[in-house]
Image (cartoon, rainbow, N blue to C red):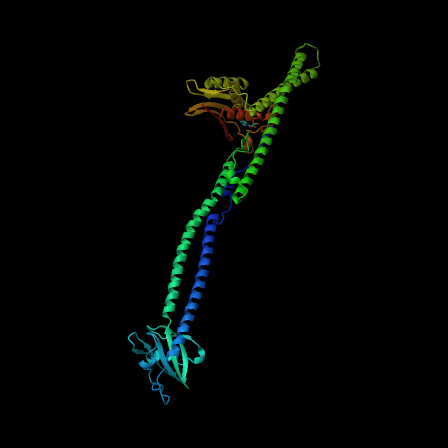
Length: 495
Ligand SMILES: Nc1ncnc2c1ncn2[C@@H]1O[C@H](COP(=O)(O)OP(=O)(O)O)[C@@H](O)[C@H]1O
Ligand SMILES: [Mg+2]
């Protein structure tokens, strides 16, 4: 009989992995993507709107400017006869609206003024008017900065007489203001929309990913099941809603369900084959009992028959008998283990432990009079529920080990103590201890120390396997601690 191989579905443990850089969650990536896309779209829409509006407004301003230029007719007095440029004076510009800039330029001289709302002409100083020098009729409408409160003006030149240009300008501040206003509105609206999209995106993405969380929870639940031992009912499945293959998450859920189905049938197959092996071992050892009893019986009969037999025949028959006895106990152990594996063969009745331990220690003393045996137990009776024969066997196996695997003169102490929820039985000896490499698998079947002493004593390596199977069948635990000079087995049984 071998233990079922152990398969781990454990989630990878944090301490086993190298530290990974923190990754963005799908949720934040989706939301961030939505917000980034929306921001890019807002910027494009905003820029196109602003450029288009500005182009439209500038075209209109230029049309107005050209119309205004046509209306300007300076009087002949204003046109200097000999090249000296006079200031443009009010009457000749009467047909213009307030805010219009009018100017005359000639060579590197410029005279300019702006019409006020009460019909007078506000003259610009020469420094500001100088920006108008050099603008020619061929330039078409251009933008100049008149500085100060006037700001940007759209201006166009017209030749009045050779060398003398009339420059007319309309303020561009309304266009600039409108464009700035539009920019502000678009910016504010875009920011609000981005915030709203981020909030709504979070909600939507969270809702959309909720089925994924449920699928992950199912997978985590399965990973916590002890799949490596015994009969496992793998009933956990992703719910039908989350396993609808028409959605992305549903495909994951459906795949997990299919996988769980495969795992469940693999587990069932494993369990069936384990059962078959157990059955076989139980049947085989059961069948071996009868012929072994016959061999023993005939050997004994021959030995006691009073025949005149040569000495070496007598010795051989003695060997046949003792080996048959040894094999019988091996077969009994195997049968017992097979039955314990099947989960049967344990009675449940109240039993008294102090008396049981006293009997066992008495037997051990009789078998090993050269060891020192002692029992420390409470005064009154200690009752637990269990199978009296099997528990007796547990203690007998531990005591036999303390006798067989230690030299003569070793002191063996059996201690019984009560706790709130159970009892502890400790078997301790001051023998040479158990080899360290044996300890991790000491309770496995057929694990034994390699000393020739054990061989002589008829060691099988099944004693501690039986101890563990019986104790665990009672819902208890068994543990061992060993170093040279101190070996301690501790059996804990629940009440
Ligand atoms: N008290 C002990 N002192 C030293 N070695 C021990 C003791 N108990 C058990 N062992 C070691 O553990 C092995 C397994 O014990 P067990 O399962 O009872 O098999 P077996 O007694 O048939 O060899 C033994 O072969 C022995 O080497
Ligand atoms: Mg033993």
